[in-house]
Amino acid sequence: MVMTIPESAQEIRLASRPEGTPVPENFEFATVPVPQPGDGEVLVKNLFLSVDPYMRGRMRDVPSYSPPYKLGEAMTGGAVGEVVASTVDSVKVGDTVVHQLGWREYSVVKAEQAQKVDPAVPLGAYLGVLGMPGLTAYVGITTIAQIKPGDVVFVSGAAGAVGSVAGQIAKLKGASRVIGSAGSAEKVRHLTEDLGFDAAFNYHDGPVAELLQAAAPDGIDVYFDNVGGEHLEAAITAMNWHGRAALCGSISGYNNESPQPGPRNLSKLVGWRIRLEGFLVLDHWNQMPQFLAEAGAWVQSGELKYDETVVEGFENTPKAFMDMLAGANTGKMLVKL
Ligand code: NAP
Image 1 (cartoon, protein in one colour):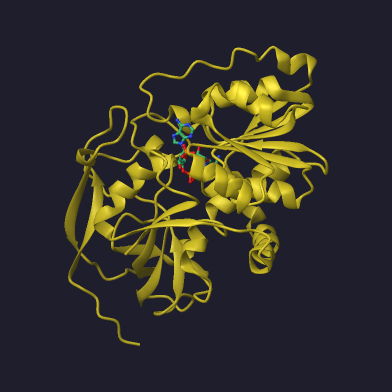
Image 2: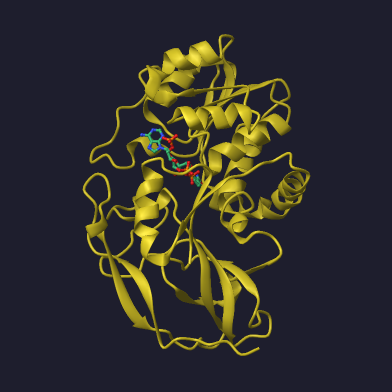
């Protein structure tokens, strides 16, 4: 198969570190030569790029589980694309692969870091419901929160990529009631009318503790935390004995210049035997096959629904990222090249 490969293509670099909310000036576009892949490498023409909240953390120059992006260098992130040149037998020209060197039009990737996927599946799914965010939801609900039939579950960030899957998996695993919070009336409607949540609220409508108390008058057993801050404190207040919280993220503080105050009610954890546990999906990647078997079947049967907000055009990648942080997405935010 002959593929036309351009001589040059664009990549997006970190131009400056954001102070607070990221702005367009934090990013710069650069035109660079498209290299031939070296030994053991493949060249991928990217078709979809993922923009994810953790990238905001990597824009800071602080030690973390994922190293900071360097100023003036191309950013990276999840991507799915087509192999257009290869020096290895295991990955051929024409294969579709997922890899982590996005934020550019063409990526040279080590063959062992290019995961072959079925091109018959809508490709965005590999960056969302059947990819890293989906596995995060699955691990958080099953391994970390150890959901039990009959549990009452609260999910924050419930209309996003991780949250929407977490709430539905909780229900599929036997939760008696699933409550979601999100940032608009339309998202709240979507959660209850389309995704099967039993109740939902817009966290802008009042104190989260009051909104949660109204939605869960008998308390909650599990909290899947995407948001942190006021949401986490409210969830602790609402927790029943032996409650479990899977701490997945705290997006309400990602643009803060100084740390958010911690929950004021941590002393409740002792008497109520409550467990809060942070986790990273990258420590649970070995569950991917089991997850894909279960979630793939749910998606196919229609029991697990998913949304994508697709922004067209490589040039709109920074905007898609900034819009995602501001809540413009329902389900997974993607860029289609
Ligand atoms: P997402 O939920 O699809 O998109 C981010 C959403 O955050 C926005 O749509 C917005 O929705 C919400 N948001 C923004 N500012 C907020 C605020 N101040 N208060 C409440 N909500 C706010 O993103 P995602 O990829 O699924 O990630 C969700 C969370 O999971 C993030 O915290 C992320 O860091 C975390 N995560 C963790 C892991 C892990 O391994 N632990 C892996 C993946 C993701 P609204 O309109 O509802 O405000």
